[in-house]
Amino acid sequence: MRVVVYGAGQLAQMMYLAGSPLGIDVQAVDVNSDTVVHPVSKTPLDIPLDEAIEGADALTVEFEHVPERLLEVAAQTNKLMPNIQSILVGADRVREKQLLQSMDVANCEHQVVTHLDQLDACVDALGNKLILKASRDGYDGYGQWRLSDESELPDLKKSLQGLDLEAVPLVVEKMVNFDRELSLIGVRNAKGDIRTYPLAENLHHQGQLHVSVAPATNVDSELQEQAHTIFTKLAEGMDYVGVLAVELFQVSNTLLVNELAPRVHNSGHWSQSGAVTSQFENHLRAVCGLPLGDTSPLGPSAMVNIIGCSSFSRELLSIDGSHLHWYGKSVREKRKMGHINVTTQSYQQLGEKLMALGQYLPLEYFPKLVAEATRLK
Ligand code: ATP
Ligand code: MG
Ligand code: MG
Image (cartoon, rainbow, N blue to C red; front, side, top):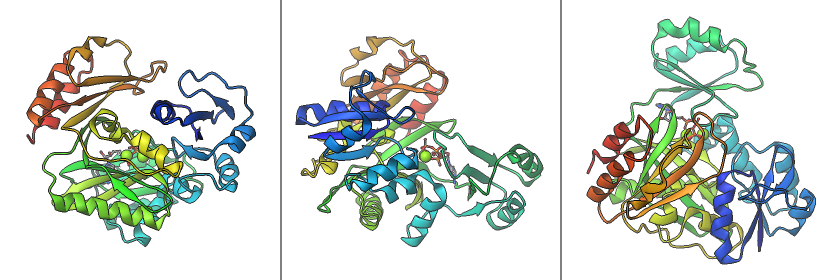
């Protein structure tokens, strides 16, 4: 079987690696040049895109910002999974909020802004602690602005002046004073079977995911069930096929949806060694019409992103239960270069191993994140 993935980054690479034992070949599309490349080496394969599409059993995406012209061609083949509407919802925060509202799924209080003058009304309606998000093309906290006091409004307006808000509106959200950030990774196949992974707890630094712990601690069956119900409602409502990630804020016993990612997700990477079946394998199984795999966890696990640095010691592999995934990209500030998964027998052990890992990583913020990651044990 063969799957063509739009996007040629680390997610396509990890799909390829997961597909190989199943005899599923994965080809990647570099969407900047419309060329079909090998998902690991990124060298061009000698196949025109239309032939690759023709020869594929399924077409899928590794990120939601694939140019619409490519998605439309892909959708016409009826082989695109998830479907084009689901991908477009993930690529546009206005559509995303509309979907959440129409399905009655709890999310952050917000308003859509197409003119800077509307910001005053947002402050009146939502208060003076706001987060403004460009509705398109944002990720890792890019394309976001924060207001923490009404007195900052004139300066904020000035810094937003160059934006064409009619073309790309802002979604203005009330700052949520959440207890923590969680995510639910789930998968649905065309038959309608659904499996969800245990909730992961996600720790951010400067708007970017750095550490996920899964299963998240202090999750009772009701909270997990609440997340499963949200996933089921969304996946069924969208007639979704593949892995879907739901980013959540926990406020007391309630989950609010922050955003959706219509693809495999960074906060599900722990499943490569921490679950019976990884998110990458389950995504391929779903889009290829195969039975879904067991999503049970194998033990307390963590995923640590290696961000913006290439100089670290591979001696960290001396920590039992740790696995390195290196993406082979050139180094750039804030760029995700690779990640480490650690799977253990207990949360106490997980805390110890994360501390040990810190010795090998030149990331000055890491001790703070580890302290947070282990505070609940
Ligand atoms: P990603 O890389 O996950 O796609 P993104 O750039 O799309 O990130 P969001 O997930 O919307 O952005 O926001 C990034 C982070 O900013 C969140 O994980 C959270 O820490 C914080 N944040 C976003 N929205 C809110 C909110 N309404 N209230 C409080 N914090 C928020
Ligand atoms: Mg996002
Ligand atoms: Mg996010």
